[in-house]
Amino acid sequence: MSMFRVAKAEPTPTVIRRSVAPPSVRFQGISQTFGQDGPNPYQAIAKLHLEVSPGEFLAIVGPSGCGKSSLLRILAGLERPTGGEILVDGQPVRGVNAARVGFLFQQDALLPWRTVRDNIALGLRFSKEHNAARTTGMVSEWITKVGLSGFEDRYPAQLSGGMRKRVAIAQTLIADPDLLLMDEPFTALDAQSRHLMEEDLLALCGDGSKTILFVTHDLDEATALADRIAIMTASPFSTIKTVVDVGIPRPRDLLSVRDNPRFGEVTAYLWHQLYEEVRKVYGR
Amino acid sequence: MAADLTAQAGRRRAAPTHHRIPLVGLLRVGLLLVFLGAWEGATRLLWIDPFFYGAPSSIAANLLRQFTTGTIWKHLWTTIQEALLGLGAGFLVGVFFGWLAAERPLLGQLIEPIMALLNAIPRIVLAPLFILWFGFDMGSRVALAFVMVFVVIFFAVYTGIKEVDQVLVERIRVLGGGRRDVMRLVYIPSVAAWIFSSLRLAVGFAFTGALVAELMAGNRGLGYLMNLALNGQNADLMMATVFLIMTMIVGIFAIVGRIEAWATSWKRPG
Image (cartoon, rainbow over all chains, first blue to last red):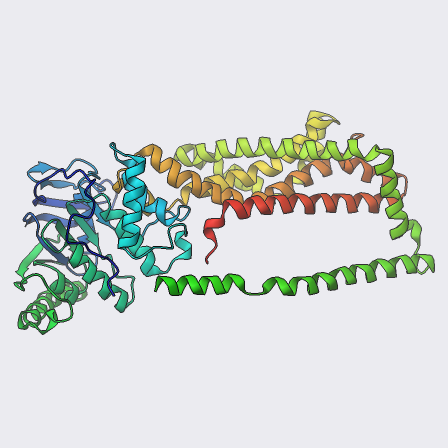
């Protein structure tokens, strides 16, 4: 059973399509030092370069604490780097751009005092061209799409972890962002829910209509979903160690993708690369 | 799967929990009657002295008389008025300073130890001081109720703001919300939840403050009635007043409980 009923046609003809193509992203010498003014500054990221093509699905893996999440936060405008610049379609990132960028957190981060319906509607209500009638229609549509019909008026505390995650996904995708950032979005879920979510993510966004940056520590997940995988070195002074081309054609079927000989090659290579980094951390 | 869960939720809600309540309720009422009967019997048989302990029948007669002659109303109203004024003032000032202390870290660091001290001591000991300052009338009672409540609300707001989930704040920002949206959707509901969880305590404190100040000085209010009964060695009046105060507080807590349940319904699973 798929949790998302994905229509082949454009889901909402009422939506004003603003852009032609999803954006490219360019990390240009990004550095991030925490506690810069304090007694113990810690430079997590040092002069990192990375390029993401329009419509690409890029996974980022690395030892824990290497600054993967920071990269996404900087790109989303939540953190400012201490050095370097990020360009989205050639334009430097200046603060949050909700119209274009969707960010799915590791936590579902729903407002506990708002119903499913209100939580999903948040982003649309913040937008300048908010139209109450259209919002109501789109929210109902997305509730159906993520399989939450009948739960519209529940509060987050009354939902299972998987359901909450689906609310967060609807909340993020309803504004139709063409740059999607995901920070270990499925980590907290059980293996089955996770598999379903990954399938649906591919169905919804795996067609190149969005540029996607996906942080994970699960190498199988990265290989199954992504076009390319960036491996980060251990922190401090972490940077991109190497970028791997997955080279498995789309559309992919998550059940059979593991039978592709490329899958084994890629994950083995990733393991090898990452193992070196992890050893550095423990070798110290 | 959706249908499945709905069915489950339906079954849970239909569980016959309310069938047990009448039995427990009956037993409770029965226990109360046995207690009152034993009390009444013991005073009739002079096993205990009705001069010191009163008797349920004479206490009830005393209460009835106070209500039929109407003398009780001005005392009841005085106490409620003082407690509510203290509660209102304590709430407003507590919210204001709690907010200020959380918003201005330097000020917070200055105020916090004072408030912690006020929180640690039994503030009721300030009663004589307030009577000295504000006289034998409403002023001192409201002041005591106020100081009892103020500290509670201050800490509810101060901790409430400091404990706001920053992930939610970032979530709102990422979805395109501005400062006002963060305030309206995250800060105010978070702080309200903290206030509601200490509302019962605050209401109880407001009445404690008003009653204790009345007990010490003045000529109005339920606390004054207690004092009058003590001076007149009138056990019936004393018991009647205690009963009245307890009934009043139970009633008020029931109302507060309703408000709290309504305001925090989002917390309840299922």
